[in-house]
Length: 398
Image (cartoon, rainbow, N blue to C red; front, top):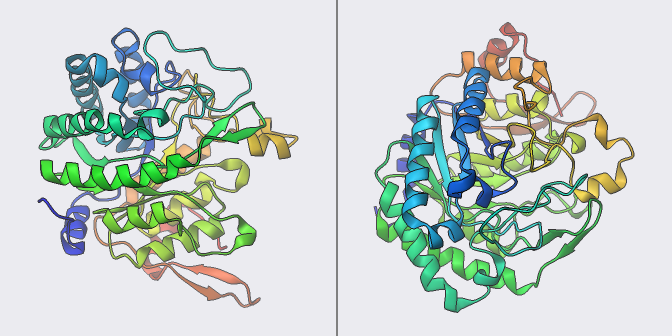
């Protein structure tokens, strides 16, 4: 279909999937996306082992990014490794969301080939590499090559049942650079303008390739808590929401705001994917938010699986700067490098939710006043509450 999916088509597709629950995946042995996909560091044994742990925990889908620079220099090798990865993931029962571009170059370096720099001690995601790289996004002379990359990858896998959907561009216009463990600086603001234009072109290019899978780009900019409760108003976010076949968003936030975000996004009438979440230090916890997303039939993809070279168990610089006891929690991730869970209770909760997860439409979340006059969460169906209670699950009322 060379046009945006209708709401009815998107919902019919989603109804067939049951409840999708997944994670963003980088092997613990990789420091960034280039590290994963280069021939020399494509670690099949680690991927197979870690996805086995995830399958046992109850996850059934994952999201992973692809590097333009590897395609540019080793096109056939990258295609073969994507196919191998999809085979391993499928063997463990995972559908895969492939992400084609990404502006999160938090290291401050442009992507490069060869051995990647080691992680900086004490620094969250210290060697994060963008794709195709911020300099290329801001240089329109590079866009024909980017178009060839996007079309080539989509054409190769557009009818592959192992691919769940296409995430065309992760956090377009993200200018953040983690200068130190506690300080962040910003890339040139022209990145936002260029990313906006490139994102719209990417939708056009991929639709012309006519993949069987739906397309999405996430909305990701949340206002500060004191700035109000209307979310994703940046022009880039608004365009992403308007063009996507299925709605996707990022929300590293507390449960009250997560509830309000879901309520706002349900108005689009499309399936909802939370393609990044889990930030324990700021109230984004599995115990509270996984049941919430289950009830609303939102497909959650937490950030991280196994603690490793990305060091995303450490919090963002802003959290490290303001929290004196940040080491008491992991920010992201759920498994140690040996497969032991950070929290056995989190995994037990996931397994219970997977056990009771039905197929069918999600519930509409509304807000109402509690007897004390405070906003509360209403999940719209008492039968679902009873199903959860029978499994020993407690939903946080926010």
